Image (cartoon, rainbow over all chains, first blue to last red; front, side, top):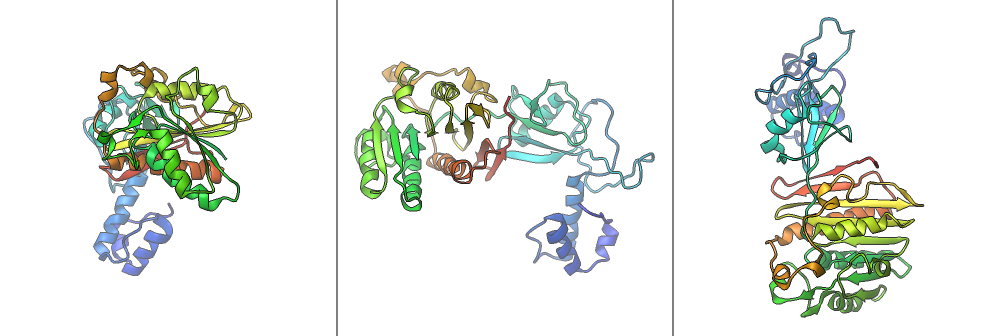
Length: 155
Length: 224
């Protein structure tokens, strides 16, 4: 993803420019006939899914809910210019997947909180970056997490 | 191509027809398909399975398909597979479609294929509205993708039985299934075949689907 804009900046652009940005830069489809405010919302949502610029928690802390960071954009004071950190990582289970703000959380916590969202089985093993990890593994920036879903039995 | 389809129930009966159509009209050379199933097609199978008459599924399907697809060659093995007869069913260089309804058969077939030099094993299964397809590829005695048991302890340590180990009562009992779920598995197995065999793409080794969320997601898995 290239340069990101604030909502105010996006509102200042033409509808045509916004739609072109969606298609050419952000991979957002289905907005060609949408009103401008809907397109702006889609772009802001995309920014949020790609990760807001906040520092990852150093260790696992209790997860009190799905803390979706949405459209907030913050800069880590000590970070070099242009540096971005993300709190969202890709989590999947079977055919279900999504980007969730779970950096700094343990695999076990994530499994419990996403149980209904991703239909994660209680006994499901977690794979981080393709490798099996213990349940207390703390997720880091750029990790990907998959909860293994059992194979279908019938046929 | 030397193709084996093990299991001709809800998934296999659909897959055998679709695969035959593709091979019959897209290849110059004559493809051979070995149809394997010890089960009998009965009235209770009507809602999900595609057969024209009652009898052994492998033998009936062979006759049906040969009439429609003259460029294909069909053979039958009208028995359930077990550890003793797999050597008669799966030869080196085979492309195996595993469409069975129990994990124990998946386990013994996967273990058997791990001892071959070259094999492509595509296994599918479903629950009521979701399911998955696994692709195990072995070339020159080396695994290019994980075997069926690698990421699936429920297959490595199955809690079910082979059909031949079941009593008549156990065989007659079957959980309800949805035809569309069988169709989903058969379709994804065709995609896996096209991707892995026709296109030679060995990167994706598993795909899941879920009818209720109308989604599918493929996985790239490491060989352990």
